[in-house]
Length: 194
Image 1 (cartoon, rainbow, N blue to C red):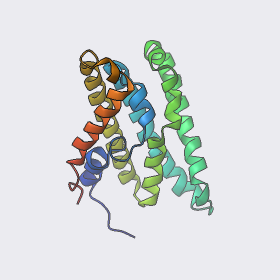
Image 2: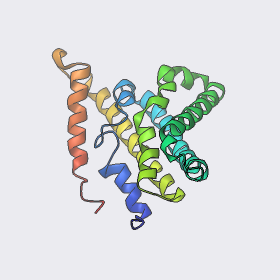
Image 3: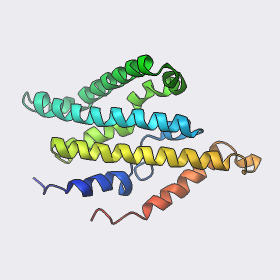
Image 4: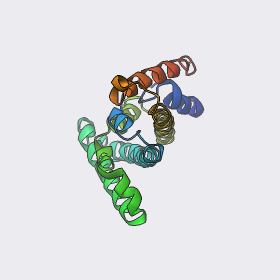
């Protein structure tokens, strides 16, 4: 078994160094689809944060409490996807009743959190790295906060650039160029986790 990583180092690594969107290119669907406006991006980022953290903890408990004792570790992907789908359903039902306007604004992107590969990746990486429950939650929180940071920054950037971009670069081209520049900026954090 490998040495246990420091919780703060684990958090910073997932937040900045190994950011799931800009360093590992996971979760790009909401990153490109919901960041046209800052309020929508913020709502989606926090909904994903809730789902990501809760589903990582639930996946840990299911893996170590159900799959490993019965020798069913090979079913982890299927079980994790079902757990994530359940958490997303719970979140959607809660938002529908607590904030119908927010539920309507998020639209199709809310159920698509289920297919956000970053959510599944966090659960799988936590199991692969043999993290404890606490470390899994810290890792998930770092990944989720990194997602929030990138979503809000990218939405603010897109709002500011929308009026100043030549017509040929409007829409997806400037979004991809901006995302590439942000990814280069986040590469500056490499080495913090060593």
